[in-house]
Image 1 (cartoon, rainbow over the protein chains, first blue to last red):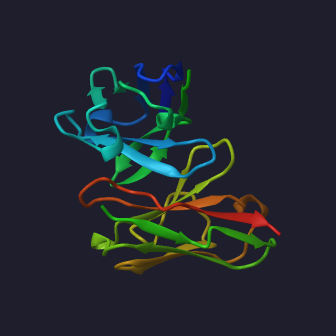
Image 2 (cartoon, rainbow over the protein chains, first blue to last red):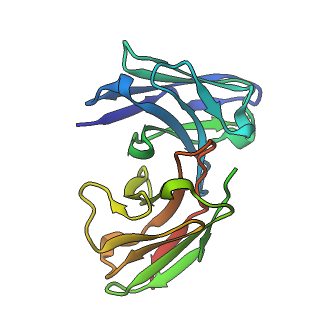
Length: 116
Length: 109
């Protein structure tokens, strides 16, 4: 059974940093691109970033470029999203998802709140 | 960047009714790389349709997708109580970012 479990969310002050993790199981992790999607409270879905199978290439939405870094450790079947210079508008539930071209499996998400 | 516009924003319907949701892209979606997701309150999105018209594993056949180019449709032939939710379209495959539509909420009338 494919499982994706996010962790690392919490309350952080504007300008602060946070590192999200996503633990994957139930599939050959190193075969897939992986994606982060976020959802602000009461809003729609926003594609944030994705990373290739070996972690050598990643792409980010403009609003997080230069602030967020997406990485992966295939030996640990894990993803990481390092978020720096956080802003109030980054407040959202962050989901990791398996990218099989489309997003076929999603985690339950972890909530990030940026507030003073 | 492809902008996806979903309409209407909200639909108020009764169980048993047929529903058609629209997703329009600002430019042609290559190879019909268009997916639909369902999201219920407090839950992660669930994949319903990929490739514009292929149902994901375990999705009932009352859900169907159609369209090509810039105009896509999700149809639910007979609404079941568990179908009241928010539906999002999403393009993938071509150059990122792989944007989502703003969503259509299907609520009980």
